[in-house]
Amino acid sequence: MRDLTRITESIAADMATRATEALHRLSPEGRRLRARARARRRKAMARIARRMFAAFLAILVAAFAWGLFVGPIGLGGIMVAALAVLLSWIAILSLSTPPAPTPAALAASDLPLLPQRTEEWLEKQRPALPAPAVRLVDGIGLKLEALAPQLATLDPREPAAAEIRKLLCDELPELVNGYRRVPEALRRDLRDGTSPDAQLIDGLNVVDGEIARMTAQLASGDLHKLATQGRYLELKYKGDGGLA
Image (cartoon, rainbow, N blue to C red; front, top):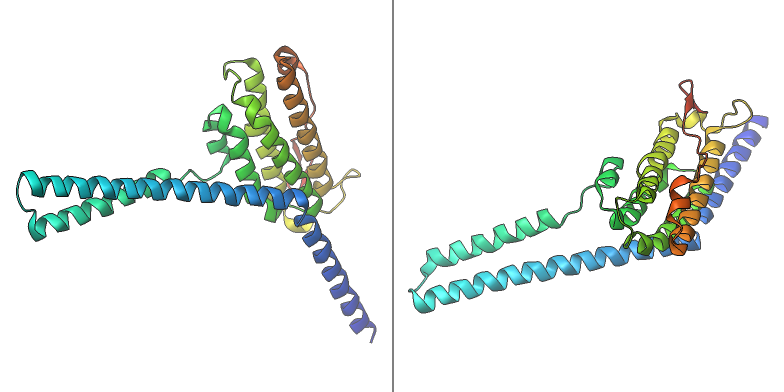
């Protein structure tokens, strides 16, 4: 009977944890970010559709002009035109597919595109993160949205640009990827009074604050302060199973 009680309590606790995580993951910030992601996908699909239609129209006009000024294109010509349409569509789809959001792709991004690329990369990390961290990631995504207009006018040769790249391309990915390297069973274990879960949340809080600070200083034009102000972000590891 006691075993049955323990099993029932364990199931109830697990269901409560899952319900709490679901509420966290369905935050207003998360819904807004997912709506923006859907809008970007619709915009990209519309752009691809326009290019495909333009390619089809160009080949159709070329085939019509050939038949009008050179001679009938015949069945062979129709097949060649159809093949040209197919190949052009394949090329458009291939060239329009953005690279997968990876830390390497972030580092290769142009500065104005870096906030959006970082947001897309963070979106891929959400399922592997604890619920409190997901809320922070959503908040970071919204701050990146505010940072984007500032980076559109920032000279990429400015030291401030290097600081922003260091935070978004190096420190943030290392923080999240370092957490993901910790075995899931050990992420809540305490070591020296803290756990990988807690260290991840602390690090994300630092990143969140840094992005807010950078946005404010860019808006005020204080690039020197942005480039020289120090910050603390713990990204090193102790042992094989924990963050330090």
